[in-house]
Length: 435
Image (tube, rainbow, N blue to C red):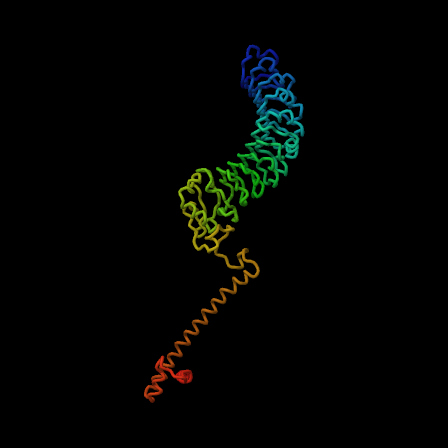
């Protein structure tokens, strides 16, 4: 019954379809909820009323008779405000599991609006409602404690700039498995405790959000297996960010990443779980990586076939060669002239490794002074040694001339000039040699 310009469906219009389980009324001209549960309420499991002219009125009480209805699609209608009464009748039916309210021009959400459905919902979609305030959504989530059946929450393409602390309250989402926040092109910040109630999450989608850094926001999400951060502006993260022991797939493609640290957890942008990722689980293509000593650890790791297999289309991952400025394959990145600190652990910076002590912020106070004094002392020592050697040559020459002058002297004098045959007056006779 799609695209039939239907304006109304009332009682008796579906008589004889008592075994109907799925009804699609997409792209009609319905301005009121179709009154159909008296006819098909005993069998209907899916109802699609998307792309009609509903204007936010509450579902009629007769919907309490649709006791098998599990899926309801209301996409692209107009529900400017969702109240407790809007879906109360469907809550009374007790069977509804999935509700799609995406792209319904919602601007207000009553704090109690989700209470009628919280006990039996398994998924909820409130995507593409850019004028819906994040504070009202957070308040509704705080008021409703969802059951262990609730697995999927979709909030794509919001107009939010920040995800506040307590957005997913602790204890209210005991089994939440999938969270979609992708496509929210203003979402640049996630507060440290915003996702504290998402401890059971395994899939997190933040792709196409302009996030620049992640720190403790994901640290308590220890069950994550898949994280999508493609198309973000992520340039920095810590060891807690991707330290989940369960992590299998990580998408960092086109995310503005310039450097990736090592496995030690102390480096800038570390990947402590690299070896545990699934084959093809790491996506890095499209990032402005720089081939310098910060990637030395990875260059060595890529010598292992097992590690190479962790990358999705490794041959498409490139970096900029610092010497030539040209783009090269990551597998061809062989940083040279890396100091001992860089070769033993992953570097903590993405800058060039050939820095003077004054340019290196990692050398403070006395260490910086020592870095200057030591080279100067070594240089002075080299000059002194050269001077001594030159002096020794000159003195030896003078001694040789002196010996020649004295070779026609008496035997005692000649004997005293033979090495290893000096008597007690050695110092005096040797000094006489150099007069």
